[in-house]
Image 1 (cartoon, one colour):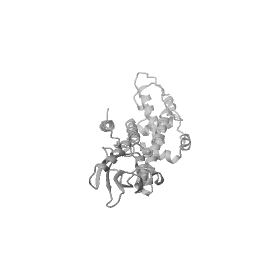
Image 2: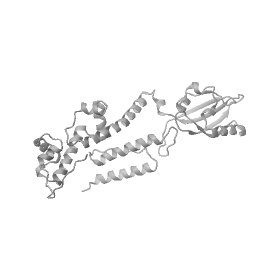
Image 3: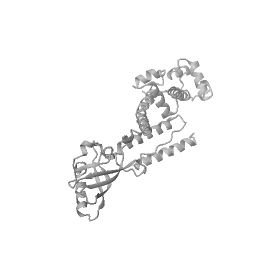
Image 4: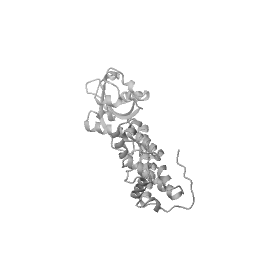
Length: 306
């Protein structure tokens, strides 16, 4: 029988998938306290959204689904030949070039060819001190970024000034402790997501075997015990052993209900060393002993997954 909260979670998942289809990868499905297949799907959908967000949105992309972003006032100072004489410190963070790569160079080197022509045209045609234009900048390691700029000149001077408000790359804030800690945590969670997915698959594929120690598991997956334990609890809201135990008991429940396999055999097939331990764990989980569960008359031969 379908539980009401399951239907609500399914609706939330549908809404999330619809938002992703529209190009919105900023939404996330809140994790619940339930430990079931739906919760696993929720984790995986959130992981896909995070991966898509990282892959699709390059620096400078304006995401219409998210209005708040880091911005900074940036200024270039050029001579009449468009050679860069000076600029504010935000420029290096925005474009990814060093000071030596920009100073004394023509701004044409960091603009799309069409943008350079438009800049020259605006300066030739403008009768006022300043004008507004959209220019396509070319960062060092990212896709072109379109930015609205204010072009002007200083009174009684020949220098050309370009003012623009730019998106700031996250690593610009790495010198700020709290932001740096937050970035490290986000990167750590992303790495953990792939790691925990592998651990999740491994556990489900080896329910018939005793669960290796945390030390053995961490060595197997190339991490330390704390990261493995903490990462799993973050995504599944339970411990590794509890998840393993719950899953093998659920499989044992299914096998008892739908097959004629002897209970002692089912106990061994689900990783229990002896039947008394299995019976005790089963009763603790479901509130009744294995032999009290009604068995179907049809003998269904259970085939474990490879």
